[in-house]
Length: 608
Image 1 (spheres, rainbow, N blue to C red):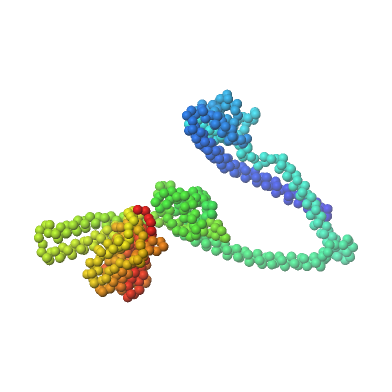
Image 2: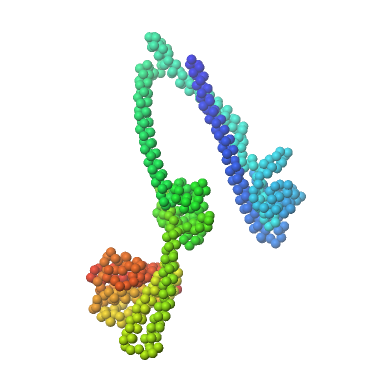
């Protein structure tokens, strides 16, 4: 019985070692046949790239000579160096005759290669790839070729298909030897393991038979620990272990069921999110994406496996490199939000808002991004801004004409007017002038926001410039019984490059606001001091002040401080636009009933 058991062990272990090798061989054949078309296409594409590269080198060589025939020695050298045992590169003319070939004899007798399919195709000015059969040494061989026309000539790259796409058993001798050695090793191992297993079982069986027939153990001594009582203990231990495994299996099955249910919930939530969600690796491969993402980019999941191929553009419509997109920058720099344009196959351009963040486990493994279509929102913003710009521009012309006409009437160009008429006309001129200033402010703000405002910088002494601005407002200060003064720290202030007209609006606006909201008998001080970045310009008053929660908001469009009623809310917003366009910063400080201070900085230097 134990001889039969030993033989079974031998056969079992031998088959267990040999069968996987045979199965792997069959699997290799199946995989080879399944992937052969794709691999062949990849090889042809590689051949085409090689032919195009050689064609570019050939064009470059031809450019350097006046007569193309002068370049043939250099081309022959290039063909010889670029050809190998696996790949032949040669050049033919429009008639299919050999101009350069690794086999020099073909060149010397101008061998006509038009019988080859790729030569006929390239002679006709075609570019592409082909597989064809050529007889070599009396045997038909399958060849892979790529060809590219060049200046009436043609470049052909030919390779043996068997060299580039070897079969699964191309080294049959090595495979057979490996199979034989594996079988011998398996048989030897099977013999050794069968001896180690069958001998203790044989001793144990004999001992159990002796015990069953009440015979004392008179066989050779068994290995230590192999006794009937310990066998029973072993059986009981296996029974307990089986019960525990069964209980743990039930628990694991329940846990797996709960995990599956939670995973299904998360998948439902992921697929139901209205915004596009993309999870991608650091190299660009797409790990997973929800249906909303594929809908936003107008692609099917099997059409895109790497987001680098998406033709993303910047907000101005210019093509942007993958490393400059929000998706790539977020991996290196952390969470980031930005806008990109994407054109679908129908030519429709969408504006997508990308919010991306890195996925890290020690190092950045990839990223996750949320995409939202903001095309309609951006279009509405553009229409609104264009409407405001058009409206303000159309209002400016009649307002300017009305102010000029009223000034003519006030100057009695159309006839004499009495004092009461003068007062009425003066009031109308003042209101129209204020409205014209509001229109000008709106137009200027639109130009800044649209990036159409060009500053005319020139180096200017800031102190004399500020003094001229304050002279214009001095009558207004005297009329309101306010003290207006200009102060510097006594040091020589450097010249600063800025747009005089635009910065004048900032200074006039800040000082006018201080005069307007400072009670009679108060004072307004203008201070100019240099700092390590440039100069700081400050306007301080002794008015009622601004609440702390309004200090940041007052620089927003149409925002006002609680004590700044009656204005348009555009003045400080325009000041911020002008200062930031110069590369500076503007802010405010205030304490209730102790006055306010408005500061802005201008950097040194700049282009004139």
